[in-house]
Image (cartoon, rainbow, N blue to C red; front, side, top):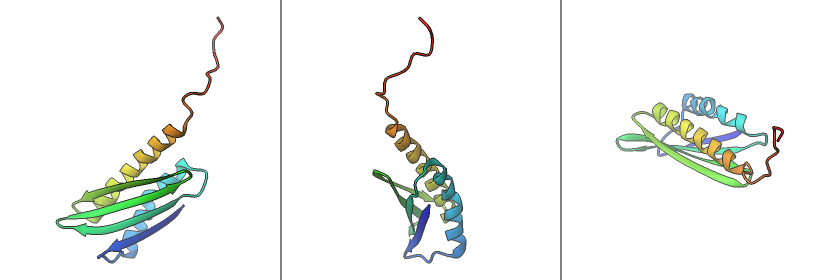
Length: 105
């Protein structure tokens, strides 16, 4: 997984960059193919703001979150992205596939 982290009117410290990468590593378990994540961190007075765009095969997913500090915003963002990815994967599953009967009639 490739994670690109940048700040909008904010310097992204190595500690923030590592925190983003550690929180978003859990998204990698949902995909076999490599995915690309762009994370933007910034300030929206009085809250801290984090948003991300994930490019997965066949779709682009976007989420954003605000928190009282940057770490809280990143935590909320990671949770939202995890839910989005699970929802996306569920939609990819073919719900109209023929079912195989498991019991005898």
